[in-house]
Length: 177
Image 1 (cartoon, rainbow, N blue to C red):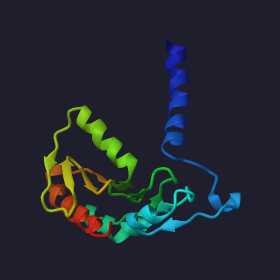
Image 2 (cartoon, rainbow, N blue to C red; image 1 turned 30 degrees about the vertical axis):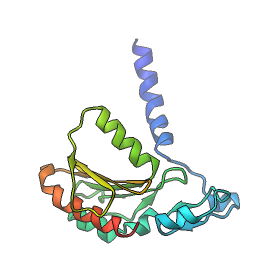
Image 3 (tube, rainbow, N blue to C red; image 1 turned 135 degrees about the horizontal axis):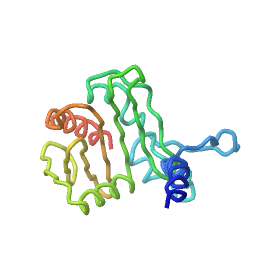
Image 4 (cartoon, rainbow, N blue to C red; image 1 turned 135 degrees about the vertical axis):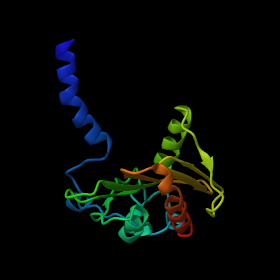
């Protein structure tokens, strides 16, 4: 049993890093070009032959919006991989603890479904121009057409303090999609 626990402790961080999209390769080094869509409609209009096209989530939800949401400075956004359009803004290592993650597409919908399946409490949100919008502690999900979006935050405060800023951020992002 002890050997298994040690083995899992060594393998799990690597698996998580790989599963979360950590990679040392880049499309620039492979010589392939990547089309970048600036809005969700641009991605929809892109032909399926251009499978490398992705949303530039960091442009759709820029650093200034992320900092306004968590009310503290953040490092520049780190985009996700081509299969999981996202952008993550982390607080500086000097603090305070803060993070904003934005996912657009299947990953956002999957997270919503998993959280619902785990029995998380969701509240319907009326102030977001979308087909539906749901909020739980420290995250908001909304759908416009077939496109799902998640904005999640990490802050060391009462999640109730984040409800209005999350709704405002979701409305701002929804207006861009």
